[in-house]
Length: 134
Image (cartoon, rainbow, N blue to C red; front, side, top):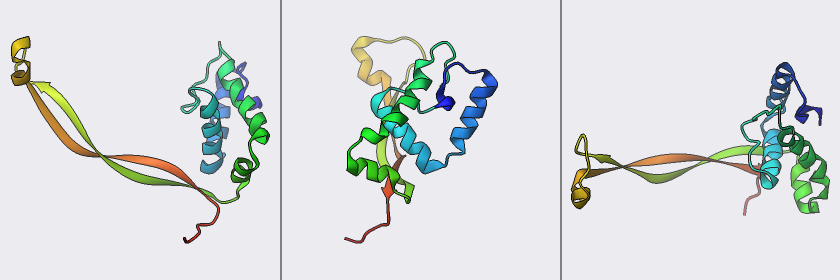
């Protein structure tokens, strides 16, 4: 809980940040996941001295983990949790003006060039327990 206390100096915040990074990927992802389920952004470790509610809510989430269903609670206690990444391909398009300056609304379609390229998005997900063959 002390990690997320909003009344901390910059040095204490840096220590807390380093401690969070030392937790290990599975534990850290569990904390971030359950925090983000209830609140907007904890993901990038934005520390706010003036508003202690953000950091303090993380402690609130950790205290509420026992109230989850037994199935979810079992997953959280699972000793083998691995973070995996999958790849998702998508088409990214952008428009650029052909004319260097000015815009004639009647000729809009001729003044714009559409450029598309295939891109890949990395998607993280967790595996719980030993992999089972189906």
